[in-house]
Length: 115
Image (tube, rainbow, N blue to C red; front, side, top):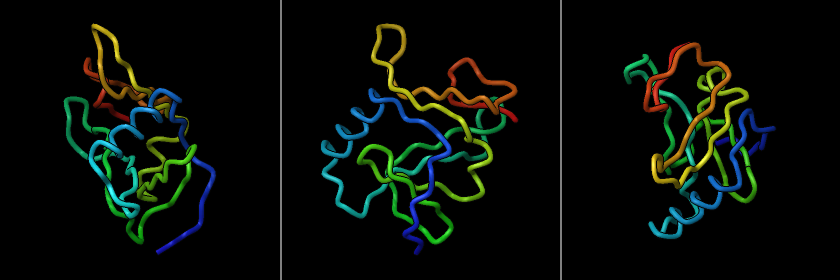
């Protein structure tokens, strides 16, 4: 497996980093669990964002954002270059949000997009 850390193609806000750390602690995840960010087919606009703790694979690039180890499938990077991942904790919206400059269309819930 690759151990090279590349410059991250996306930005995770401080509030999102804080929430990711909380989730890691609450779920008692071991040191091998990394944060996976990517995309998958589906959703009302064609593609959905993927944000979950997972294991590193050979097809991943590795990043360290703050002290969070992030992996991303090399094929997904072109879809998330310049994207911002944020955490909102308001009355009308609670959860991770994705602001993606590569998205041509997004759905109302903000978790699905097309390119």
